[in-house]
Length: 186
Image 1 (tube, one colour):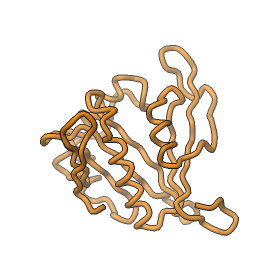
Image 2 (cartoon, one colour):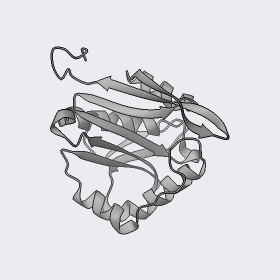
Image 3 (tube, rainbow, N blue to C red):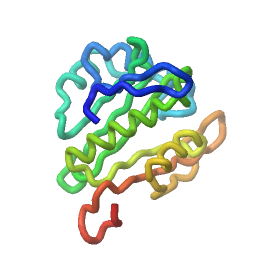
Image 4 (cartoon, rainbow, N blue to C red):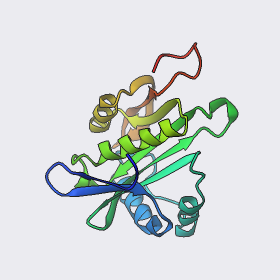
């Protein structure tokens, strides 16, 4: 599916999935900070990069190495996703995935649309394995990832503390294509 793409949301309305643009920087920072302030879905509570840094990141991203997506509803960026290819020759066949959606827009199919676009990009640029980390308490996200074929590869016991309680970080992966004959099949 070419970007931008507009898809219907559960409960009505539609979301447009598109590449993030430099002018989206303030909205992304506000969204990431709001999601971080919830203290239950992402590692950081406060986004620390400046608007200029994020603008440059979106503007200068190598399209074969990184993808930054925006989810836009009624002209407002309500979420996003990023995919970053491994930085070294030994792991350039892999990419890490992250996603964040404002609370009021969760459960409406936006995550599915973002993940679908991210996977399409990954396949197009030759990524063979997509990886991610998710807190074990984020059952909705884990269901989404499993729906797309991600499997748990590791569990870091008590990796984070949420509301004073240790929580596991679940490391998941999806093989898009084998890196060699020794790798699991896609």
